[in-house]
Image 1 (cartoon, rainbow, N blue to C red):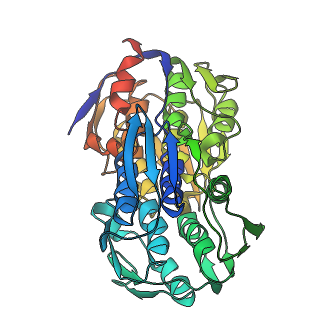
Image 2 (cartoon, rainbow, N blue to C red):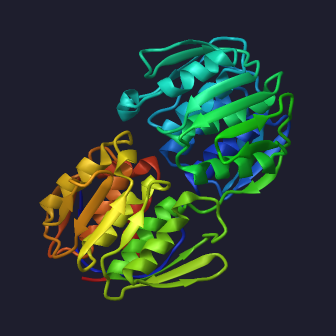
Length: 416
């Protein structure tokens, strides 16, 4: 689907979708809790639907009770032998260890760009901890058969924190205690999110500087009633839209959130945007924007939003952490460079692990999302400041995380 975004100003108020990172973790914990949990403020993008399919296959019974409340009757008792995770990297890396708790073989299948993303990092530790695994050269599909015993294992944490998250959520149910050592841990705010979510369900996990985790075996997840936070990753795009093209109030955002992408506020302040933070609300407004420096190594999902911000800022902005971008839904550093070039914005990747973006006039043009939801939203946000309409090919990919993104963009448009 092509989507044409005309230039214009924005003004108004929006509520971003719920955090898909929190929602997927909460769905997994609800499966592992024997009894009824209630998840409030939960919405369903493609990735969250993938997690929902997984927990239902693994034994959970779910029902919408009212509005945005999902009731989950937990209990790990597989009703099928295939988990279809769609294109969700988190679902693949979260539910593979959880499936490894089961004594029957379970196959994990993906589709699209996920089939090219690496899974080998979790295979050796799962085998070390008792699982039997058949894989396709470190890619999906994989077949696992448990049960996980616990013990000692090492995992390379330099590729993604999602591998660590899956193990941390599964291992409390192993028969024995586990010491998990993690080399070069990245995206530690996402690990904090996992630890926080597990604690809410009554599970304790100790760690030392994210490099060594001690997980007592034989624990139990306790059913809870839990409200899912608003998604800071989605909100980052909205906040940049307000900072570059008008004024916007974004609700249901907790400044105390464990989500990594709360860091967007730091970038906005460095760029000179007007920013007012309240208890559950942020208001951002356009001011003359200046080039900024920012380290996004621990929050790589912010790169596309920061690219749109930098494109409207005066001077050359420098964003560090590009090595984290190669194994996303697209090779995001290269895609951002190539697609923004079509709009007249220079993105320089010649400095190791750094993206330099020279802000300036944004031209009208035709660009491609490359099947990447965050690229589509970045280009649409930048289009608000373009000299003419920008047409985005493959814009339907926003459904992966924010199905209503383009409709919301139209809601806040106030003039051309």
